[in-house]
Image (cartoon, rainbow, N blue to C red; front, side, top):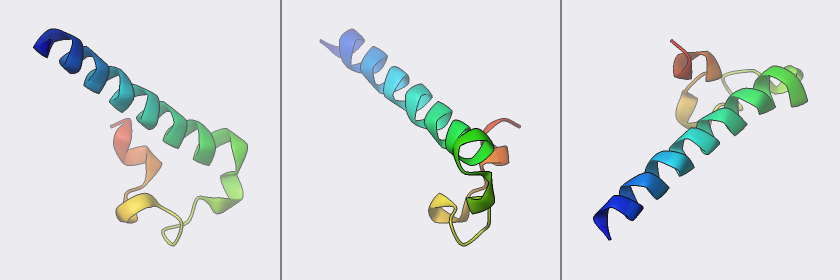
Length: 48
């Protein structure tokens, strides 16, 4: 049970991070301002 939960958690984190980057880089680049970032975290912070 723990192995499956760990895998599910890692996959959900990867998917969320990918969606966050794709949204601000490709879908709506005009929204890439500090006012729109989740908790003030830039999408660039997730790739460095």
